[in-house]
Amino acid sequence: MSKRRIVAAVLLVAALSAPALACAGDGSPSENATLHLLEGSELKDMQPILDAAEKATGVRIDPTYLGSLEGADRVASGAAGIDGAWFASDKYVALAGAGAKVLSRVKIARSPVVLGVRTSVAKSLGWDKGNVTWQQIADAAKAGTFRFAMTNPTASNSGFSALVSVADALAGGQALANDTINRDGLKGFLLGQKLSAGSSGFLVDSFLAEQDRLDGIVNYESVLVNLNANPKLTEPLVLVYPTDGVVTADYPMMLVNADKRAAYDKVTAYLTRPEVQAEIQKVTARRAAVAGVPADGRLNSGLLVEASFPGSIDVARDLLAAYSNELRRPARTIYVLDTSGSMEGARLDSLKTALSGLTGIDTTLTGQFTQFASREQVTMIDFSNVVGTPQMFTIDSTDANSPTMQAVRAYSDSLQAGGGTAIFSALDSAYALAKEAAAADPTAYVSVVLMTDGENNSGIPSGELLDRLQQRPDSERDIRVFTVLFGDANPQELSDISAATGGKVFDARTAPLDAVFKEIRGYQ
Image (cartoon, rainbow, N blue to C red):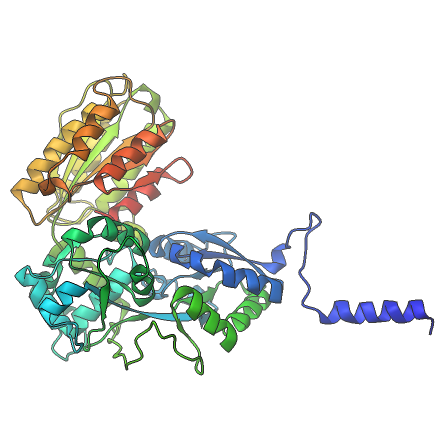
């Protein structure tokens, strides 16, 4: 055989035996070598691991980051272009009735939901020595000696996991069911929840901003380990692992598109290699999901008791419904709605759809868990160049056909566009009502949602209102303003307002307005 033929044969063998990266004509990975996954935003810290996985397997992960609830809805609806999902847990997928759509699930990492307590508080409560129970935590919360941050269980897995852990611990040894939910005990525990959020990441940012007024935070062990390394933290946290049980997130990567089985198998096989699991543990502080990987010294090495998860999906739904409508502190929500001339047509129709969707007519999983809740007071203020008369609705039933829900829809249907845009005069009026609501019921969650599609051209300027908000007294610091970017709204002005109150900006320029309104519900 000639030397040229020998070289060619060697190159051919090398090409066939190497893990090739399938490419399209433009040099990018082909669709067969790409997994389009719905992912929780906390998994952004996995990117260095996924970059290495792509080099090793030729498969690229293309993520779409969104909340667990919305992700479960998309899986349930069979949304096009989705190959799988990767969240902290597959429990919301089951709640959405989409479990059968999952063709395979491989656990990638583990992280229990535990409690981080300021060192001084842990010592004063005697929790720095370990052997702490959820009952003790609930008793301290009810007594007002422990104030904590926790995500909303109807929107975020860390809050859901904590709620299940506490409910299981307070069930008195009985299996968790509708009639064994200790409502009084859970109410006591939730009295201590002074800060809520729709995501674990935002909860951490809010906790850092409010750490002088809080005693602890419920979150994933991995999040708390990394929080302890944050230079903005003024006092280290003692990690408390309740001895009566915790729920551990196992981050299953789920496959829903059978055509991508080969790519999925390559990636999951790589990610579960012991050496890769050790790297995941090092980079993210999440525990290994496979045996034989040495423990990270930052993580608790003691035996963890796993709480009993509800035996049926119906029980989990009952628990979440009880949280929203009976157990949590009641909500006082004020919506400030732009009805200026620029809202005419499709924009106003989008607003009406978004408001109506919160009245129980949206039967998706996100719709069920984001609708207005019993005991909630909802105030609507529409504005153009003048500020409309506030309309208040007290939700006494979650039935979509109840008189109150129908009244909200009737208000929404009556909105008409016209006139200028007095954004900050309207927001000033709303904030005055929020202060009254907070004073009347200090236990309530009070929040303001501002939706506008343009720039302020009437009434007071943004700077005048911003000055007031930045100088607000401590008694008003729990009132947060969430702003919605829509149409031609000024991003900087809305960002400044939200930042001044510890709120958040939501972008409805690239997402449906009804989806944004539902997302905000996780923060209220």
